[in-house]
Length: 288
Image 1: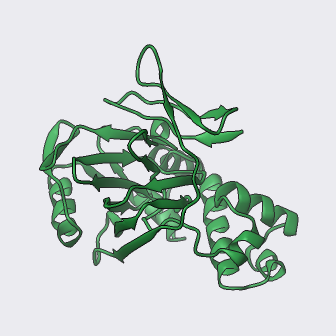
Image 2 (image 1 turned 90 degrees about the vertical axis):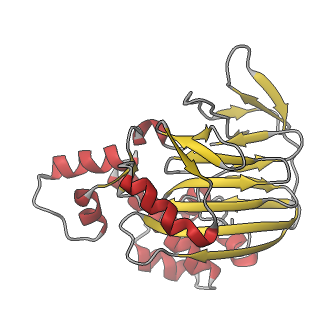
């Protein structure tokens, strides 16, 4: 069974489906559902990428840019952020907003694509967005080569070198909301609220419970240590896993690879700020 993502248009939220056939994905975009072919490939990908931060930004975790010289496949794992993603090719520019993610997704990138991903902190939410409903899902926003529409307003398509200006425009328009209570949990310095209120604030803002968030965070830390060559036994003790079986299951479920695969193929991961899945070739486009 292969888990695939489904397309969301005009704020219609779709869901994941376990499919019995690797080569078909059902996209629930209305009635009847469209069936598009997904050609399963495993191709080394030639890219140029760069990542930056916006200094002292209360909203943004990082900004990533990927230029694809040769088409191929990567793996995007949850990283505790949600994204605004802009995919540019010779024909068009697509704008996508994702929620936070809890599972890995394999990505197909077409030759010549340029992908800009602005990854927002988990304590930040977009006005009018239901974070719980957006978990592991995404929206294809109305866009053209010059601009896109979000929450009823039109914004210019940003570039890597002016992402800070773009984020400032979103903030001035009142579309970005930073939750101080959630950030206090992430910082380990909780504000004076009841535990129940804090937990509710966390789920409303991120879409998931704090327990689930910490499981994802721990799996990410474990994967990073394993990629650097640390032994599985050391990682188990350092990060509080019950045993190696617990480590293996956690990393496989959340990161999408086993510890041994990470050790051998540590570079098989998305060069984008994680979480956004964009399968894109001439036959299929799918987002989550």
